[in-house]
Length: 393
Ligand code: BEZ
Image (cartoon, rainbow, N blue to C red; front, side, top):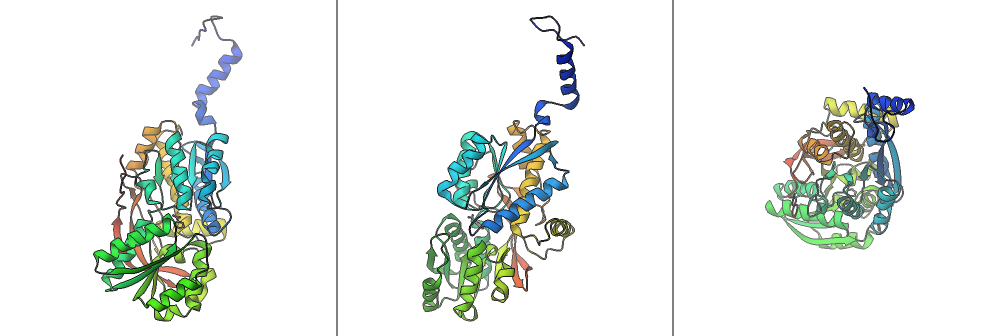
């Protein structure tokens, strides 16, 4: 083969050798590492959730030999502190300073909404491995934004149905006052009211405050049939302990979105025993897929996985699916997205597909705490899809 240039007529030997090497090994992007920006909390009440997500993500990458779509992975990390006020600056460090190819994050809904805005404005691929902010797969939905976890509405709705069907009529809710708490309660009310129940009082405190005492006194005075709650991480540990210490566990049944007892049972001890929650994962699924995942996770990290680890693992599976379709060239945005949209993700939680808005359509289990496990005792909602209010794709 003869290659001509407009100046010298032929390329010199050194250039031709370099070109031949490039042609033999593929295009330039296949050589470069894929830059993955992990924006997760490493401090604060959600720190352990961030760690589990990163562990899960890295486990999948390791299982793929350290490469996705033929490209090695290079990580760039920011501790977002679960602080929405710092979120735009933090995500811009990854997008503008580090030039990442893909964003993974975050845990807190307020932080994830800031990430989604930057992702939408810049076209950077974003996979949300936890935060349930309804808006991310609602009004903010976009072809380059995906979620491997849930919408806040989903587990709340599932528990509303369970409690309504049990004939529970009068419920008090208690949660943190921010998108996750508000939307969890909204989903819960949708499910409960459809099944004949009513929320009679909505209690809340600012995130990440854990001074529950005054609100627990209000619950005791209101004497509802039951309480529904959303708390997670360190706050969930304290809430379960305080609820029991106030003597309420014996008198007013406590129900929750599964975050209350996921990754928290060691610290909650007997105070969590018997609690009923709804979630898209459990410790006792017993499927070959989940058993293999749990074994690999336990071997690698000397820890049991939780729902956050699964969501991190599945975020990496979704990324791997998109990258495989474009042979590592994430700039082929349309083909990348189409591959994830078409995929059935082989999750430890059970296989799931994405809705049009890119949120998992998935089963929600009814679980009960037995010892140190969230054990499945039934199906709360099968193939539950988020309503995706306001998403125009
Ligand atoms: C959220 O902010 O969306 C969230 C945080 C922790 C657990 C679940 C949801």
